[in-house]
Image (tube, rainbow, N blue to C red; front, side):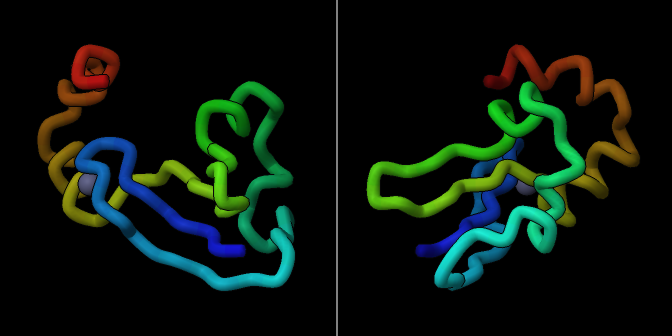
Length: 76
Ligand SMILES: [Zn+2]
């Protein structure tokens, strides 16, 4: 299976991992509550896991323009 990290803002692929099985602790998913997991982690039809994250570009943009956080729900 593949684990694909996708930026939730610009939808670009941030990273991709090939694993025989998902290790939730290593992926940092064990710290999330059920609601966060449902929001962030999406199981694809082909068995891949898609994890929503934020890329460096968007993180930088948000740092400089914190008001974008409030617009987030409108963009999606
Ligand atoms: Zn981005």
